[in-house]
Image (cartoon, rainbow, N blue to C red; front, side, top):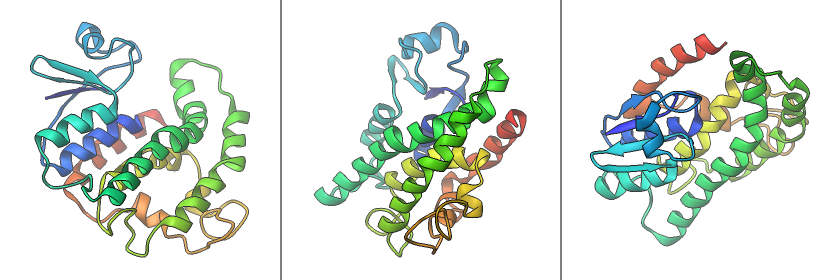
Length: 224
């Protein structure tokens, strides 16, 4: 099974971690930003990463890829089957893909990616997102994160993978989560200073998927 994309992408990272937790090994190949050639274009007609190929089956979009992998390999279970837990898991993935990623994109792109592409950095946009929007996200996570440290069913699920992946990108180039900058104590959280989201996001317990981290850190060193 081939995955096209770049490791620093939160969506590529989400699929890699999900697959690793399932015990699946994906062949990651360059895709996007002018890379991948015809093979990537066939799997992702609109140039979005990640793209995926399994024999004669091709698809793009991280959620679609994860749905495919989970259907073929339902165990270990990472998408709960109980109705309420399943709905919450899907919500957290949507929250990550459309809200957390949208907030982190101007920060990560302008501070780390734009210089590599020769694009003018809009550091004001990055600063504005960091100051105005990030604290609200951290407030939300601090208030909904159960004492177990897992978002759904007190165990590791797709919800944790999905939300952590874009937050990791933010942590590479923003000190708000790590240093507690913001309107209140802890994580820049105005209502809760316990700082539980930091170890949850940035220092996960050793897992099958932890093997991706050294490879990604090498890539991020080249970006910084």
